[in-house]
Length: 264
Image 1 (tube, rainbow, N blue to C red):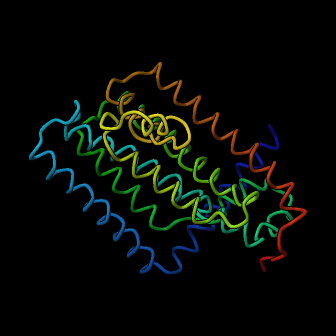
Image 2 (image 1 turned 60 degrees about the vertical axis):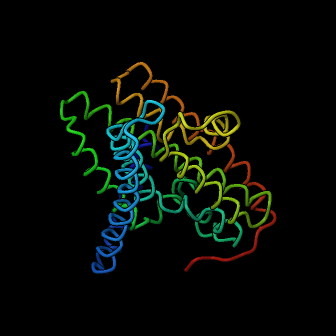
């Protein structure tokens, strides 16, 4: 428990440092946040126009899409606002830039992931909160289940993105592959699940766990299904543990084969 408490305090300090760094260039920070809000809004307008013409698609309506965006963008914003290096892990490994973290007496995986914040992700978080306010679901149970589902969505995003980044331990520079796979997860998560069938739907539940980012959390929040929420939490914990196993397995290869590039 003492070690866990120490790691949590260290994470809080990292997050405070990242926020302080962002505040040093406030104009840049604000412009990135506003730009991402506008980007999400443009994508959201597409669905407004679509459902204005086609009221229901495979049982999905505009209210479902609003709630889907509220969950996924909130989850994305929390995920990469706090653990921004999950987006660039493949590049860090390929360039031998983990040496800095190996030299310090901290949990390497947590330190790597949390040492950078994606500033634009705070725009996603802001948009997600605004989208949720639009749903009108303001009872305490509704807010609580949305928050937990969004946290699980964020955990799945960080873990799955970082898992693809870990491929660099075995494939050399897997940056392009990791980027394509990550984009596929995010894109699939923002579409109604029921329009996908066969192989694509299978991939959304396995190799590209987009269903656990968007559609499944949506179903849970929509139905206030606390039992299913426990299952989602279990999946989020499971994929996080899988990431730790894969990362530290790959780290043994990194120690013997990667380039030396110490951060100063």
